[in-house]
Each structure stands twice: as C-alpha cells, then as structure tokens.
Length: 265
Image 1 (cartoon, helix red, strand yellow):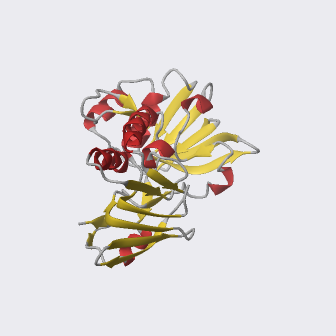
Image 2 (tube, rainbow, N blue to C red):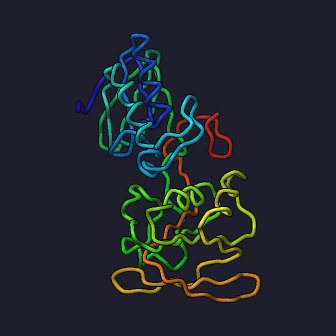
Image 3 (cartoon, helix red, strand yellow):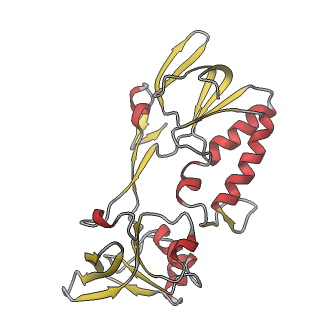
C-alpha cells in the first residue's frame, strides 16, 4: 500500500456506505482511495456483527453481516480503489485544487473531493460495571463468531436490538440463553421483542447484574431485581454485555464541519 497518493476522490470510512461509494466512483471513471482506521474493510458491521442477520437491506429479506460486506467488497473492487486500512484521518486542509488529508501514521493523500462515511466515528463498547476483570474470560461486548458460545450457558445483558438479536441468534447453539434488562420495556423493535417473549429465552426484567464470579473463566453471575432487590445466582460460562457503544467523531470535530448531536450535516 502506498503511503502517499493522489486521487479524484477520497472516501473516509470503509463500511457499507463507503464501499458502495467506491464502486460508484469507479463507475463514473474516477480514481478512488478508501481509508479506514480499522484493519479490515466493512466498518462496524464486519468488526462487531459479522454473523448477525441484517433484516433491513433492500433486496435481502435477511443477510448475515459478513456476507453483505463480502458482496460490497467484490462490487467495490471493480473500481480498483487504493485502500488505506489502519489509517485514521487526522488533518484535513483545503486549497484551490482540492483537499489534503494526513493520517495518524503520516500518510498524505491528495484528492479533488472527499466523502466522509465514517458512521459514528471511533466506537467503544459501554462497559458492564465492575466486570472488566472478566474481559477475555467469558465476558464480551459483541459476538463475531456464534460458535464460540456453542454448548455454553449464556447471559445477554441489554434491552436494545443487539441484545435481542444475539439472544435469538444463539438458538440451537448455546445450551441456555438468559436475557437480563434493567427495565420492564425494551428499546428493540416490537417484532423482535415478540419473538424473544415467545422463544425459549429466559427473560428477566427489571434485573441488573450485581456480581460476576469465577476464576480463569466466568462461573456464575448474581443478578438482582431493581424493584424488589431480590437476588438470583445464574450458572453461566459466558456474558454478552450488549449495552451499546459510545461514539467519538475524533478529528472530524476539528475540520470545520457543521455538526449536530454528533452527526455531520
């Protein structure tokens, strides 16, 4: 990969939107570069949800995240983009002839125009309180490979679509599935909530995690009802903390862009 380059178009963000933009740029006979701070193409979908079924892509009733990315990459490659992976765009300057972007690794990219398709920017999972000691020992914030949880008793924590989707996706893979949410209502789509309530998932509301116990691996989790303070101990070997992510637009905020609630206008 070249450290420096000059192109008609630079696309910052190599998720689904950026990949399709790269294809269309080539379709219009533009030379194009793709840049992403992650080490692989596909953005958040490939990094966090490769085996999750995506249900809201036009033309696909259901498609796994990695399959969608693979198809988008194949399509984008027809444009022969130059790819800068593991490069975070740090500095952006404009002049009469175009834009210069310098990455945190020192690469300089010149382009006549820039498209920012960076999604939520850099994303970090919201941690499960007092659970950091079990990261890598059975606690995870997303499930890149469902088979890693085969034969395990799994606790999923959260009330959004990701928590609901993981609980359903592990049907027939995990030995048991328990979903804990601190409220009696869920943030996820009603259809997903209905499926969960009609499934074999043990749904516990309004419960929260009090303590995780174990040695080299998780052995059990104490949860409590935040209304009655009733406690229960669950024998589990894996915890999926699907509590969402915090976003950081990082350098984008210094580039003079119009922002509203962390969105680029």
